[in-house]
Image (cartoon, rainbow over the protein chains, first blue to last red):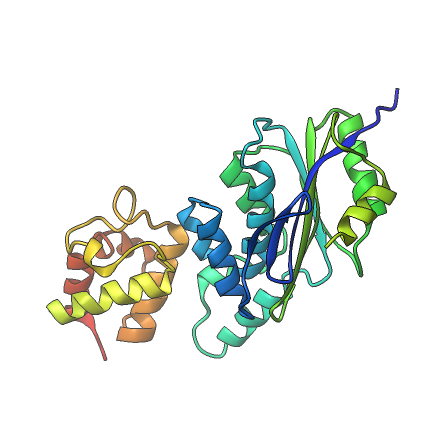
Length: 197
Length: 85
């Protein structure tokens, strides 16, 4: 039997703002992403010293996930994230560093799915995870993948969405799919929530 | 030697992104790994790169790092003895 799933909650990080379920949690006017995300980290009382070692993509994904999972007791949460730029921002930094001394700390972030590991370590998730590269936000693919894992009972909940960072531009939209929730888990609703804000 | 130790503390904080740690919080004898500063294996690789880049010291065997990077004291001692710049 096919179950109907729901979107429990969602978060955006874009245009100098962190928002949960459409409500602003933190705003900053700086043009610098590092300053912005550092401000969000402190404002939201995110206590995780390894945060400052992460690359920009992982910081973005980590903060969006932390907003959603901070008070989430369920641990069997599958992860399916996506973006357009992959880890290109960090890849460029690594490429530049090859002219002199390559930094191991930069090199380890030259894959986009590393951010899934950062989220999993912080929230102690030993679950299925996958990172897709798309030309644009692809609600249908995320919907199909999340539904499939939940139908097959591979995960009790799913953390899904889009987390893109390149050349200082950033856009994160993550949401949690559960058996119960405010919105029906459908491509129409995913697209609608993505476009909010 | 004390200047070198201060320089090492500054470099470690900056290059290893230890955002929440101040220079005065690092004692010369504090363990850098484990219970001390809590550095990890990637940090160890960064320290090996730092020895080469800033002091011209190439570690032939990365396992040597275990003793060299025990504390600021041991790092400074090794650098004083082996530095090429």
